[in-house]
Image (cartoon, rainbow, N blue to C red):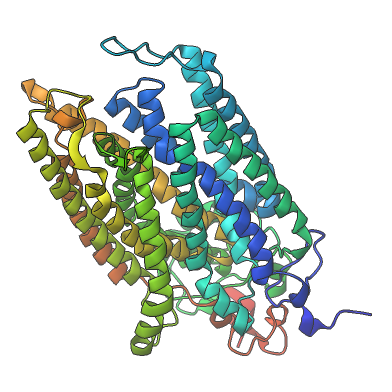
Length: 599
C-alpha cells in the first residue's frame, strides 16, 4: 500500500536510498539521541586533549610557556578551520552523512596513534630531574605526537560541520511542532557539547595527571568506537537532505557574471531577471528563493543579455547575497574566540602556580579548573532556555526571546568583563608573589588557592552561553538551505581564526614588550610574568570589536523563514509551482523576459 503523502516529511528529506521518509518513523529527538551521543563522546575526547595539552607540552615534551601556548593555539586553529574543507566536501561530493562516516573513522585512527604516542616511553623524553636541565624531545618524538594531533584536527574538519547539521536536519521546518523543537535544538546541542567537555576536563584530565596519559587516551578511544557503532545502528532513523552541489562553485559563478555584467543597468522590474522552474531546484535538493531588494547591484548577475551566455538564476544570486551578508558578522565574532583561548593556555599556566590541594590526599589537576567554566555554562544555559527566554518572549513576541544578534552582543560584553576580572585576579596573585619574594622562583607555588581563578572561568561560561550558542544558531539559520554545512563551518572557522589570531597576538606582544631590555609580559617563569597587562589589552581590543559589531548588526536584515520565502499558501514544499504560478512577459534592454513566477 502506498504511503499517504500526509505521513511524509514536507521539507524534502530522504533516506540513504533517496526515498521520501515517513515522519513517525524517522527524525525527531529519537534520531537525535544517537547523534548527540556520539557528539558527547567526541567532545569528551577533544576536551581531554585540548584542556590539558599545554600541560603535556610543558611537562612531558618540555616546551616553554610561549612556545606551548602558541602550539596549542595553532593546533586549535587548525582544528576549527578544517571544517571549511569538510563542509565543501560534504556539500559538493559526499553529502553530510558519508563525510561524517569517513572522517569519524579517521578521527578514531588519530586517537589510536595518540594513545601510542603518550603510552610508549620511547616516544617522549625522560622526566625532568631536580636541579638539572630538562632533556628536549627528539624530532621523532615531536613528529609522532604532532602527527597524531593534526590527524585529529584533519578528521574534525569532516565531523564538526556535519554532525550538528545532521542533527538539525532531523526536524521539519514545515511542521509546526517540529519547527518549535528545532528552535531549542541548538541550546541543547551546546548543552551536550559542554557536558562532554565537562567530563573530559574532569574525569579524563584527572586520569592523565594522576594515573597515565595512555590510559586516559585508551578510554576515550574505546568510548569513541562504541559511540560510532551506536550511531551506525541508528541509520534507519535518520533523515537526509539531497546533496545540492558545490555552493562555492555557484557563488563563484555569480561573482564572475556580476563582473561581466557590471556596466549593465539593473532592471527596475525583478521579473526580468533569470529564473528557472521551482521543480528544478527541488530535484537538486534546493529551495527557490524569491527576489529581495537588498544588494540590488548583485542582480546584474541574473540579467539576460544578448551575448548568449547563460546568466545566474535569481536563487543563485540570493544565496550569494545571504552568504556575503553573513561575512561581516563572522568577522566580528573572531576576536572573542581569542579570549576563549585563554581558558586553555594562560589560565591553566596560572593554575599550575597555585595551591591545588583539597585535603591532604587530593590535588586538582590545573586543567580541571575549567570544570567551573563548563558548570557555569551548563547552569546558565538551563536558566536561559527555561526562564530567560519565556519571560523575554512575553515582552518581545520573539520565539527566541531576544534576537540572535542581541544574544551575541550580550555575550561580547560579558567576555570583556571577564578579561577585566582576570586582570584583577592576576594583580592580586602577583601581590602575593611580591610579598613572599617568589618572583624569581619559577617552580614556587603561590600560597593562594586555585579557586581564586573561579570567577574568570565562571564568567566565561556565561559569556559562552550567550555568544557561542548564538554563533552556531546564527550561521546555521542565516545560511541558505543548500549551504547549511558551509554555514555551520563558519562557526567553527571563527574559533579557528580566533585561535590563530591569539597565537599571533601572543607572539607580537611578547616580542614588542621585550624590546630594548624590557621584561616581556609573558615569560616561561609565570611568577615573573605580567599576564594582567595582556588581559587588559585583550579587553580593550574587544571593546573596539564590540563597537564594530554594533555598527554591522544595526544594518543587518535577517533571512526570511523558508515558509515565508515560498509563500504562506505552501502546504508542501513540492507544490511551490503549480496553480499559483503564471507567465510574465517583461522587456528589458531589448530582451523579452518570459519567466515562471509565483503569485
